[in-house]
Length: 187
Image: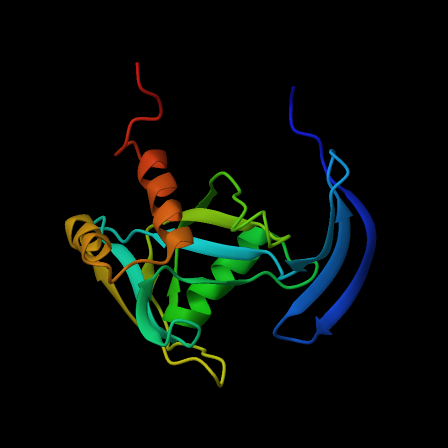
């Protein structure tokens, strides 16, 4: 028998500000078990870019992530503004965080970051023909460095734990598959 969605008996917001929206639901499972509270975060959708330059190097960024209290190597990524198309958000984040533009952006499958606790989605794009055209346009709280790296070096960073943001690793996987570097199906 397939899983049955839970019933939401009630909801209340605990936090609603520019950094977080946190909801507490009272839920009932298909077997009648009531869970109260069940916390759900409602962040905006995100857009991430796996950007390749003319030499097929991948653009990575490095920035401090306070939740983990560490510097992370990641992909250019950010929140999608209300009413903004995901592709436009991806191009905007690429330009703001790195000063780069791309000749083309191709959408990849949309993923759920953590459907147990987050209501949002992450949109991944392959950018081809990426090049640096201007200075970064960082927010006041951002301190980001960027560089283009060959794929073997990016894979080494993943293996060493330096590139460990799971959503970005999965986005890279989708992009490599989209470029034919990983089989799309196994016989």
